[in-house]
Image (tube, rainbow, N blue to C red; front, side):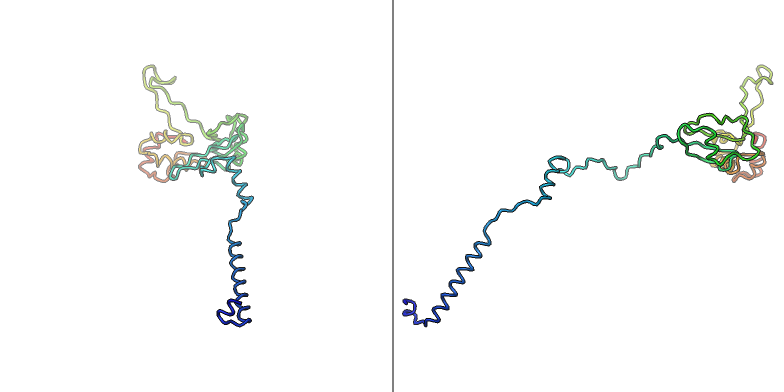
Length: 228
């Protein structure tokens, strides 16, 4: 009544103002209630992660328990699988070359892995029951290099005189032995080994002419010093 008399408001206007005032008070109360602090429960995934960190402290610091290779460092050579050996089968077989066999394999197993012995090859001196060792070479049907005579001569030489020099076998000589020949270096020695591997050895000294890097002059120097 005082507001009505003081301001001269009509009853309808006064009711509208009262309604606005009530709505404003309600809105203020709702805003105050919605922004009050509320407790929040941590998700289960976070709790599980915290439990895992408690069990493994290395994960909390970001440390990697598995050692990683250093960038730029050369990779360490991988060892041969356990229970496996590598042998080189050369000579008169169908597929000469390096063969991987189970540990404890015998010469006969290496011959089968190389495709078998060529027809007509004499294997009388080859012990096919012998157990192989890793890194071994099995030569099939190749002549053995004769043993070099001593400086004092052999049985055929007179005492105190030097015996004749032994001829070097092209089919079984190592790379180091081939490099002792006149005019033969590491590259040419490797060419000779590659030729005999591809052709199953040397059947005659004249096959040296087919080796890359051996001309007529060098062949003439090597011919009296080697044999097939």
